[in-house]
Image 1 (tube, one colour):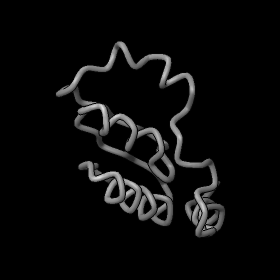
Image 2 (image 1 turned 90 degrees about the vertical axis):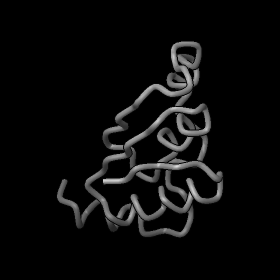
Image 3 (image 1 turned 135 degrees about the vertical axis):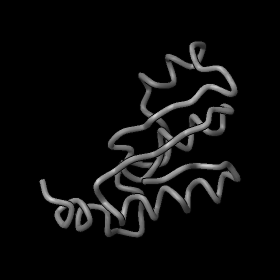
Length: 86
């Protein structure tokens, strides 16, 4: 899919996949230690990247959609966590 298609997909003011992290990621929580670095590829609106940041990880969130990344920044701001976005 092209970036414009993903931008259209994420245009809604709602979070398309919600704001809760993927259950598989949550199940790995014991492996994630504060201070670790994480690259969240295809992070979309940031639900996984922001969750990892709340656990103290240094996260870089990457996605093809600039619309999704804007929402990821907003979610990180709401949760008061730093999130690198590319």
